[in-house]
Length: 156
Image (cartoon, rainbow, N blue to C red; front, side, top):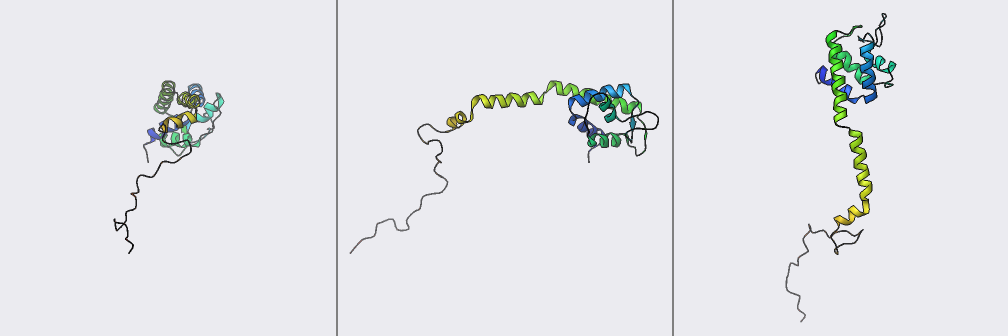
């Protein structure tokens, strides 16, 4: 089992960027609780705060990681340290996403593959003049059969 801060960091990184942005706005605007979705005094969990600010995601792993990080089984307000840590993790996660936009990298790769075309790639891999498309290479791993008697039989 990983430590609570690593679990929380991973859960945050798995959230969509829009949800992380909304959560950041929400934790800055609302009283935040741990151990429950809401409390009786107007406190809300970070996921509900994100939901109220436009991040319409349901992610149970985040809620579990948040409560595990806070080390609580009861409903209470989040401490300043817990809120500061959550805010810093959200900011760092959003900054990391800006540096390495995985979706853009995947789209760029797919476009490059589409431009190349599959038949061209296969043609480059075949040795010219040796095989045609669809032919198989001979299996060089199996040695040819040898005769036990190298001389031909004689007829008398």
